[in-house]
Each structure stands twice: as structure tokens, then as C-alpha cells.
Image (cartoon, rainbow, N blue to C red):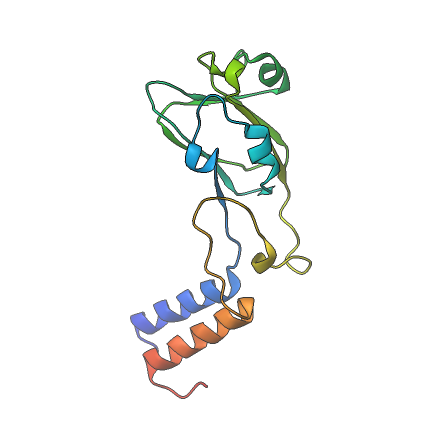
Length: 170
């Protein structure tokens, strides 16, 4: 019978081998953050958003905010009928549906360019597009990619398990 530590290592190995879906945190405006006078359309066009990713807004919490609105609210810079609002200064918003999202600053700065629209795509099928090919220009920390992709990850897990258990798996 395997010990509790062995069971945990086997479970961790399984998750590492088969749990290869990762989410990307897209930081709006990258190092410039959520501020007036930035071309967020250009920023959004340089990113690919998938269901399960996050979009995060970084700003001075007493100065700005974020509202999720519909296209009319986006086009007219109005918060009427807003779908959500955030004001923490470090807002992480999950993109849980395949659709176009619209975000604006609700204190009048929308008219100074503080608005962004992003199109969220469904997750690609695992056979057609492995996670190693899921690339983005996000300024967030990238997942670790080993040479050989998932095969390299599997080899690493097997090697670590072999060292841990002291058995000659490889």
C-alpha cells in the first residue's frame, strides 16, 4: 500500500501531466496601466483572449474605476445598465464567456480614451492547438515551457518521481 506522500506525488504528477490548460492574465495597458491618453484598442489588438483568461486593470483606486458595459455604453461612455463595476485599483476580471466584452472608466475619463473592448474566443481543441502553442503578448508571467512541450514536462515528472521514490522507472 502506498503512503500518503506517495499518493500526493502521484496526484501531483497526474495533474502536471494531464492538467495542461493555463489561463493568461492580460494586464490592461501593460506597464502603463489603466490611465487616460493610452490607445487601448491597439493594446487589445495585440492580444488573443480565450475563455478562462483574466483581464486585469491596475490604477490609482481613488482616481479611476472600471465598468463592464454593453456596446452602447462603450460607444457613448455611459455606465447606465452596467454589467459590473470594480474600484480596487487591482481588479482581476475573469473572462468566462466567448463574446465581446466592453470596459470603460466610469468617472468621465472614458472620453479621454479609458475604454477597451476585447473579443474572447472559445478554447481551442487540445488536439488542434496544444497549450504550448497558446501564445499571447501579455505582460503577465508566462507559464513555464519546457523544451519538448508536454513530452518534456512528462519526462521531468517521471524523473522527479524516480528520484523521489528511488526506483528505477527510467
